[in-house]
Every structure is written in C-alpha cells, then in structure tokens.
Length: 514
Ligand SMILES: Cc1cc2nc3c(=O)[nH]c(=O)nc-3n(C[C@H](O)[C@H](O)[C@H](O)COP(=O)(O)OP(=O)(O)OC[C@H]3O[C@@H](n4cnc5c(N)ncnc54)[C@H](O)[C@@H]3O)c2cc1C
Image (tube, rainbow, N blue to C red):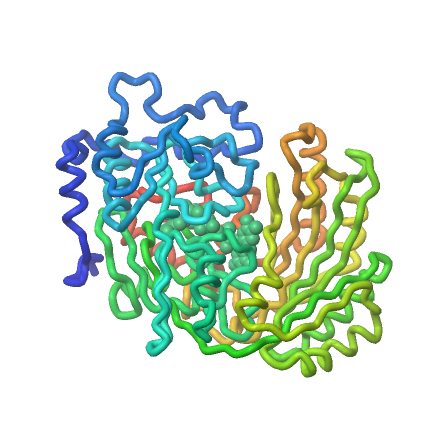
C-alpha cells in the first residue's frame, strides 16, 4: 500500500515552493550519513567537541535566508529576540543544545517548507510543540521546527469533537473548553504540548473515566518524510493512525492538527490530602487499598517527595506524602470513598471540594519538575512502598526545590478497557504507573549531580527492575527501551516506520527502529 491517496492535502505545493527557493535543486545527502544531534545529549555537551553546528566551517552552508523567505511564519536565528525561549527545552539539562535556527511555523505549508529545507541541506532537525520531552528530544543543533504558533482550538459541541492545532498546550486546551460543558482528557501540567502528550499516550486525572488522550483521536494531519501532508484517520492511512495513538512523538512525521472526541461533563469533585512523613507507609498503603476497588470515576496520584538537602549538599530535608485526584461525582460520595483512608491515617491537610470540570483542572494543575531533571518510569501492579520510603530517606540532595520523589498514578478503569493492540499504546493492564525522579540546578557540582543520578538508578533497580515504561516519560538511560515502551506493538510500529519513513528522516536515539 502506498501512503499517497486522493485525500492528500497540500502535498505538491510546499515542495514546489521549496524548489522555488532553490532548495529542491540542491544535492541531496543520504540522511544516514549525518550524526544525529541528540546522540550525545548530556549535562555537559562541551565534553563532545564534535557537537558543532551543522556545516560549520564548510564552504557552502545551509541557506537560512532562503528558508526565512519561504516561511509564512518567522525564522529565529541566534541573537534574535525570542530565539532562546523558542529553542531551550523545558528540561534545562539539555539547555546547551542550541539550534542554528527555529522555524516558527504558521501553518502546514511552513512545516513542509522547513522539512524540505532541512532535508535538502542535510541539516539535522527536531519537531517541537510544548518542548517538554524529558530527554530533550525536541532540541537540535540544526533546525527546530516549532509548531508553537499553531495554537488553535475549535469545539464542535454538536458533533462532540475538538480540533486542535499542533502548538496547543494543555492550558490552551482547558481554557478553550471553558463554558462548553465538554471535556477532553489530558495532562496535569499547563505548559505541556498536546502534540507530544497525545502521540505518546497522554494520561491525566480524567483518564480512568474517559480514557487516554490518544484514545480520543479521531483524525490528524501528518507531514511525512516525503513532504506530503496526509489526512490520517481510521479509514485513511489506518496504520499510521494507529501509530499516532501512542507510538511516540518525532517518529513518523510531524502532526499539524488533531481532531479528538469530546465528552459532556458536569461538576466534579477534587481531593488533596497530605500526611506527616512518619505516617507515609500507613497512608500510602491505605490509598492503595482504596484504589484497588475504587470505581474508574476516581483518579489518584500518590506522591512521596523529598527536597531541601541531604548528605551531598547539607541542609535538612523536607519530606512529604500526598494524594490527590478527581472524582466524577458528588463531594459527599467522594468523602464516603475516602473515609476508610482518613480513619487509618489522619491527614495533616485535607481538602475535598466540588468544582466545575475546568476549575478542577486548575485546582490540580502543577508544573513539576523544573530546571534540570532525570526521571525513570515503570508500569507495575504492586508498588513496594517501604523500599521507596527507605530510598527517599537516603536522597543525597541538591539545590533544586523540586527535590526528588516517587509518584504513583493509578492506572486501570477506561484505560484498561482498550485492547493493548487496538492502539500503539500497549500499557493497558497494569495497576500503576510509577515515576521516580531527581532534580538539580546549574549551581550544583558535578559530584552532587552524579550522586543524584546514581541514587535514582539504585532506587529504580530496587523498586522496579523489569517491566514496561512510559514512552512519554522518555528515559535516555533505559536499556531495552523498544520493548519497554511498545511491548507487543513493537513489530507493527517498526513496519509502519519502514513504510512511512524508509530513509529514517525522523530519528533520535530512541526513535522507533526501522
Ligand atoms: C512537567 C511535566 C509534566 C508532565 N505531565 C504529564 C501528564 O500529566 N500526563 C502525561 O501523559 N504526560 C506528562 N508529561 C510528559 C509529556 O506528555 C511528554 O513530555 C510529551 O512528550 C511532551 O510533549 P511536548 O509537545 O510538550 O514536548 P516536545 O518536547 O515538543 O515533543 C516531544 C517529542 O515529540 C516530538 N514532537 C513534538 N511535536 C510534534 C508534532 N507536532 N508531531 C510529531 N512529533 C512531535 C518531539 O520532536 C519530541 O520528540 C509531563 C512532562 C513534563 C515535563
């Protein structure tokens, strides 16, 4: 089967436009010949002198002016106002990876132009929407193809659909849904991009009731390696559509637009609980017991955290244990569900309130972690709480107020009702997603950073040595990541990759193998 159908949109136009700029006529280098810009991404990329700007020092460099002329949006070069904000990844661990330019794409044609230009000059590139890739895979030393300006949201209440531009972030989505009476399940952090989140799955406080974000996908537009913009749905390019439901951002093309299912919602209830650290074991065990039998209408995030210093940095650590979530129902019913927990472990803080769906998202929103961080995830059925507590009491410390932690997200409910092979997102049957993380800042010494990373690896091995991992908590230090991210769906994803990107134009260290 070929990827070209009668419903191709815009296909030839942008390639011709690129040709008019003199781009298409340039010699084409085979994409495999260029080392990928992310391959050596680490806290100190200066250790890798070959990390230079592409074509730096060569006789004939890429024609940035030609790209700037062809774009409907703007091209930002180093020194231009806005360049740093548009190019630095959310995880500042990778902040030193600076691009030669950022193409601020105004529309699909701009994405096609930028991609054709990068290919013609053999300039490495990365797509970027919200910029929140844990591993900085939205950063590049070549061209950042930024979807950020393509922020749009159109709600069709009759059809119960929402159409989003690829630059839309969670906060835009939630703001756009205000007053419409409908919901789209998405993540907690306001600045995460919907593109990356949806393409790698996407869970939030509504997912046990409404499903993952990728489960809501009805149609998307994808600019593939060939430069064509394809309409992708269950009937048009069905394999690519399947891959876009959890196959991971940056793998198959650049998505420019998503149409997702919306669900009518009324008022909901939220809860936020905190306990003294000495009660951590009792409180978390009680929450796990509750979640084991709770309806899918209840979501739960359990957080064990430490901040403010440790043996490597001095200072006295502050440790916290919290649980929070959303309930699709009345506050009285939620209080009844929580009652057994509150009886065995008395919280030091306790909020249960009924809110509009949008106010609930705001009440639960949080931007974590920030600055520099490393994070490792695992899907599991039985979290080992005592081991987590012991490890958190040994965190070496850093100057980042975000500290370190272990978070458990209750899985199941509507997430588990989808067959693992029905979408590219394979992780359906497990009880929890566990995330473990450590943070630091530029002020911390190499010794402090190394101690934190060693601690994280040790805890990860102790807590969850085997199993699947969340492709959206993408982890550059994960061994066997293809199986961990994609499980039984890996073979079909490789097949889709070979068909839509035979030359591996879209590549980064953890790109789907082809
Ligand atoms: C603070 C924080 C909170 C988070 N909270 C949640 C949460 O509640 N739930 C959850 O499920 N996940 C969460 N995540 C993880 C998040 O889903 C992923 O980091 C996701 O990849 C971010 O998407 P982005 O568009 O912001 O990132 P980007 O870094 O822009 O993109 C991520 C990857 O997708 C590629 N990409 C970007 N745009 C496109 C596009 N339009 N087409 C094709 N490929 C593209 C990039 O090249 C990169 O490889 C969180 C992450 C952070 C840092």
